[in-house]
Image 1 (cartoon, rainbow, N blue to C red):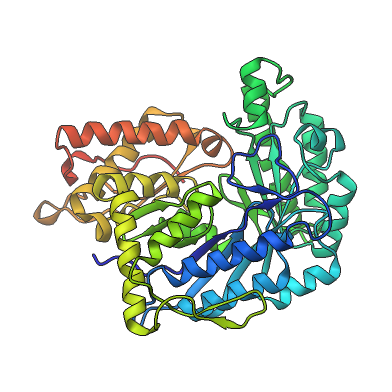
Image 2 (cartoon, helix red, strand yellow; image 1 turned 30 degrees about the horizontal axis):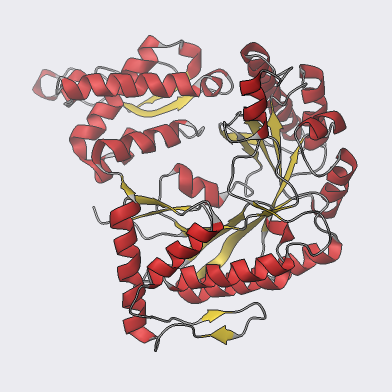
Length: 475
């Protein structure tokens, strides 16, 4: 099966006023003075344009991009004209489809109405607002650079999308419930609910190692907080169905709740394990079955871009801060484009990690089982062949038989006739999904069990249809 054409692109904008205590992302701290990020952003965006110009060119007849995602960092610190230049540069390089979803992550306290309007004029169609909590004590304990009042003011400005994190130090079920209700009553079209992960290279990680990080919710409380998020947001969806004033948020992925028409198209491409472009500090692309991570330090990232550009000199045109076109390398044209493609191919071959066969299939299984749509084994066949698809179906059935029934949603295909004998064959499973909330709460355990059963089936070559059995669980 030929590789799919990338329809999504991620761009990393790394500037932040400060580093939050839980943050392990590649960022550049610029302080909180107005305009502190402007000069650094101008230099960095020029580097981004160079990377875009040195990246794989759009193939004739290839469809345009369906989603752009500007993540960070705090992308709303980037001056709107620079963001507009990046959108234009990506449109020039790859095309943007009609209705292309262009998401910008924003933090409270970094924008007003005028700045928001400037971002919308630059091409932004969707905002992801990072709030984490509406409790001042918890925001301070997380090292956030805004307070609850700034969060509410930001919601008033845009009321489009927001993100909440659970499991913060000092958080209990009551404070979590207050934050959930505050988020749900804002009119947000999409809410993401994440459990805190303590990473080694963060302030939280250092404090945890030293034994000074106190009052983290234990596993039982974190599980109750997860169940509470599902109950609160689904109750509002049910109320909306009865015609009451509510927001109709439905879970569609482990951490994501959204109204119909407001689900993240960009993240959905990730969950389908589709290829995507990526540009910028620490960003990872997924092209031609290869994941390529860019360096996390700015000097190393600049050296990476120079490597892509290659010794030949090159030069596709790109846009400077004011939007004017610049030619920085060689004579341009098809020869320059080919030089950039060669540089990227060499970087992928040396630095990238290729996923294919069983490894690629297990990645897709993991991503699909994190969604409420779940895994449809029939969709594996065109990508991985009948043998691996049958093994995956059998492994999911094995795991569902082994784990609590309330974790699983299983839908059977219609039973087929049994030939001359007239007997019907046992129905096969057309869909495996993890139930909200219990199955999704324990998704890591469920997915690990699927992988273990898949390994067993592949080791004994029991991958044909005869070893699968029937689909017995209810929907």
